[in-house]
Length: 296
Image 1: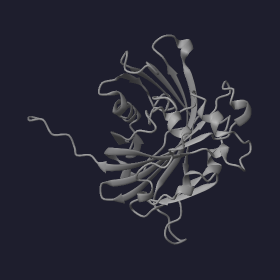
Image 2: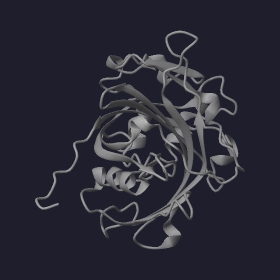
Image 3: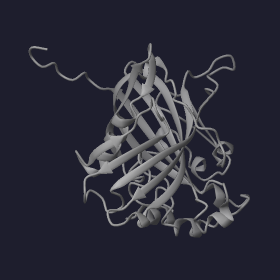
Image 4: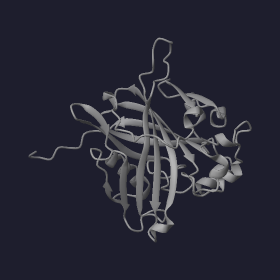
């Protein structure tokens, strides 16, 4: 079943959602949602943070907390979706039928969101965060993008990734093995915004959860194997929320917001408003160090 058919048929609450403590209203209410991770950490989705901005200064690199350093085995589970612009009180109001009929929206086609290459499918892959420049922890984007994409496409499907954070932390070019996917042979990523958010309150008003949360705006251009003129452009925002859940364990939420681009006919109605929000739960376990080769 295609992603847009899954959404169109209303199959938004998948197995395991209620077991996570996420109420059904959390996926259909246009304003806010709350849940709890396995570590009983409150999770809040604030839709006011999802309105797209047109003009922003180029963002810099993020510094991640020390407890995220290392390599992690990630289990990524799709837990639902929402249509904020289709709520009765939404302004502007966009009927859900119009949204799901737009096959160009990020998430409706495979590979249209690089870090979540098939939105409705569970994935297992690795992520890595490394210490650089005097102990500063940074994301290894080349490693993470390659592993996320190959969790869907198969090993060695990503042939090269051109990314140099010292020169330009906001652009990456990914090349795929010919024939790996009909939806893209090359992917261009442009990060247009990146900002850290405050941690939500802890059990009492004088504490916080110690989480790490940030927004990242992405424009993705996917070029098909035939002609550059058949490229598709998608705009989306990731809201990443990482919570330390014990030794060698991190729980994370990923909310991904899809927007219409100015070239999309739907943009005339929706403007900068979020059209679809996809929710994923990530369980990250510290990966064992690679075995040492004799003689090293």
